[in-house]
Length: 407
Image (tube, rainbow, N blue to C red; front, side, top):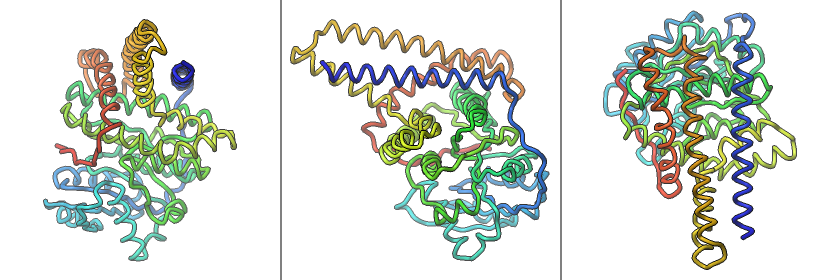
């Protein structure tokens, strides 16, 4: 049938283009040094925005790493929103001399709403014009001592929005944390670094990014409340014509989930968030890609394209048409075999990608060679679990849920 042929051709084209682009990014990054920025005066004032929910055990480590920066501490103010906290997070942070805003709202749940509340409070106090730009961190993060100094260089080179190198504090805990950590390191080294080489826009991750005062005013603070508010912010910025920069010399350390259940819930939220973002921003991105010939719009259309949803539709139509005799069961079985073969090759490719990431970023990966060998073998399993997660996201009502951090 024509519909099945169209779906097959569409998925093949999108898959080939996406994989081809990933390959080009990897090659470009391997054969080009990391982009650096020239020295800049350390005269810009920054506000650090932190959303925390019951993080009294870990947020002091982040604050200490901010205070230990090579950038002048009197040019950096810390603002934290204690979001529906039932522990002593607010008291602990106040005792460290930071600005704290407490929020109690059990109806509007999520980091996006917390950031909105925090920036609205700052706007209400009339302090937002005191800062040239704003950093966003998660409570469990830690920063390299040169982080703000390096981001300041990139900011003063002309970027209004920036993201940074996302490493992990617990990559070597187990195969779950290593899978997540390697994925983020891969994104930093092989995607965002290459996007900078190509002159296109980068993807802002959920933490470790900054935006200028002008961008904050354009958005009237923070207006992004989907399940993946960082991805929503990225899409909105690209549609406004912003080029999001990447500073690979600014290193942030994030804590990854260590149990499969936690990882599943987190990635289910991300997968549902990707579907939400495609629904609201996909058509606009496609229009911009065609009308403006904007490569960043093409890049991010591929990023948020719902491949799992397309695959599910293809299976449903294939079964229905076979039941009504429009196509043969044999043809659909052949298609299934081809998909399985492609999946096996994809898993082998994921194993190679994990190995390549480790070899390219060995100095940044804190684990023994024996552990890394095991994580290369387990990485395809971690990635394969995205298939049922993405399928569940189509039907489930994923919600933001906190993940316990040990610090």
